[in-house]
Image (cartoon, rainbow, N blue to C red; front, top):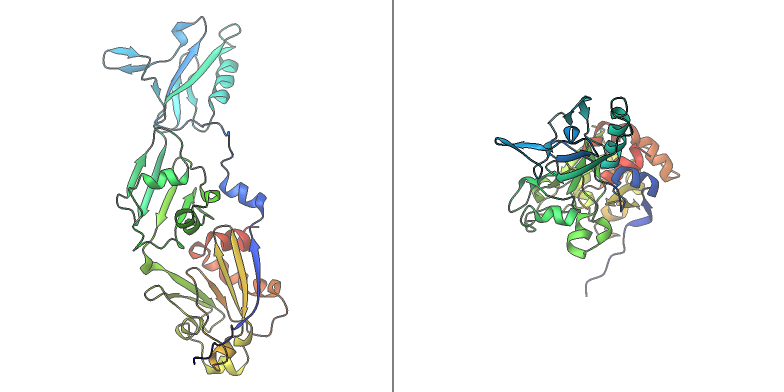
Amino acid sequence: MVKQLPSAVVARRPERIDPRVLDAAVGGREGDAYRVGPGDRLLVAVYGHPELSITGYAGTSFNAVDGLRVDNDGTIQFPLIGSVKVSGKTTEDLRVFLQERLAVYVKDPNVTVQVVFTGSIRYYLLGQFSAPGLKESDRPMRLLEALSLGGSVVLERASLRSAYVAREGKRLPIDFRSLILDGDLRQNIKMRPGDIILVPDKSSEQAFVFGGVSGGTSVPFVNGRLTLLQALAQAGFSYRDRARGRFASTRIIRSAGATGELFTVDAEMILDGEAGPFELEPGDVVFVPPTALTSWNEAIQQLLPTLQTVSSLLTPFVQIKYLSE
């Protein structure tokens, strides 16, 4: 009979990103108005003044169905006013703006604005899709719909734990495993034009180990697996570190989307054969403290300087929770 070894986990506690911080990062509330962007086509009508109404030019005649295309710099040319910056404005914003500007030339102008073609809605699907690339849409989408533009996710090669949505240079804390495998629609966020969806290959999966001689390093997973002792060995830890009692309060930050867990693991027990191996997950942050710690707050304070240096490689949860909040 095989003896079941106990767990080396001394303590664990759940963590999550503050909802207000999460909302600021992800945004996309229900009912948010559409914002005009480059490539869109607009119809602008000024009641009682057909000479000021804007339609698009198609061939040798004007075609009201086509509308006027918003230039790449986000502007349109409007009679009397000239160049008008429309990118980022809602149709109501633009209507009020044009009425105020036209009031200089026209008495009590009554303006209507309509988006007739949404050419600015583009998403970039990169990585393990059957049909990756730049995708255009005729309407705003949620994440699941946007994923479908790439055909299908190649699950046998995809690292869902490492997948992310990038918006304006920042990664959003989305749990792709929960969304795709468990149908967790809380992860089905509203997309914005220009969003990037990256689903990397499993070969890129890694954990991060800090506290060693080099300060910190990344350790790759092999065939989807990596144990704590394997990671410590590859990071350069030795029996000298063990002799100093550094392994007894090893700290691990694990995250998925906007939630995380903080583990305190006694790696000494694993080394002595008194506990079973501790399996790491992609994106885990492992910290072997230089001295005994009394709290997680103390551990985070010791970790922060090193985390800052590799912030772009860390999970969105760690970036937002410990480097932004």
